[in-house]
Image (cartoon, rainbow, N blue to C red; front, side, top):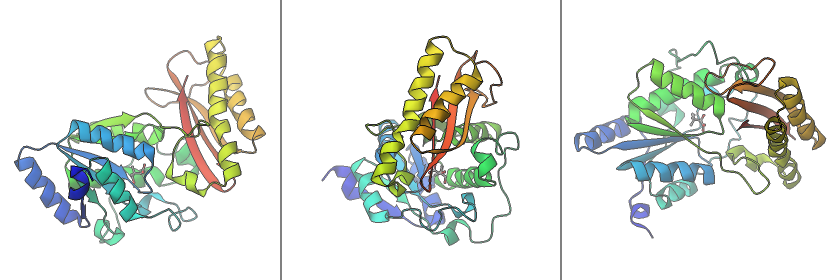
Length: 286
Ligand code: PAF
């Protein structure tokens, strides 16, 4: 057993974590925060390890945030396995798992939300109304509770990461936002807690998202800049594998605005699609 594994501490109250962070900061310790909803996988572990390397204390929050789920979404069935997750956190070197109950985070219904009206209704936001306001609001709360100087998020949720960076900058949170590369299965499927919902067949078929990305990248590398062409290649490959595409968009890497006709600057392909009942998102830089 490694040193930190013995020391992993589970804190369930936001007030207790806030006090603990205050104490750590007074002792001159730096705090890294890895916000998660649990069901941890290799992608999360890579974020935790990055934080452990950079900071004296790493806090992993595990909270399935009700406020970011729509009425017909998977809040109730989202996988929850705190003890196994806490063990993984300890093995990765984290110091604290913060695992509050909803009534600790939201003792009263939340009335004050963080919004980004320009971006919260685009792409995933168009299909998940209220989702990004729920994400930004809980991340703002986590920053205020855990007091990190660095916070770590997966690049897989590209729109989410962009919105969190913008929030931290616009609202002067003294937190450096660090994004980490998407970790993929052998067939290219981006690791996600929701992959657990996929049947074996769906998991194989979902590798088509990455195959679509590779095809678009290849075409772009050969000089194809037509947004319509690049989008249709990705869509066709996913649909051929029985995926139901919700959207394929090509956006500017820096401001997330849609690229209308030709890809001339740094751009990213964003995809949301379903395999069976499972909604997956992914992105690639062209
Ligand atoms: O990406 C997630 O797991 C969640 O959206 C986050 C950032 C932990 C907020 O609940």
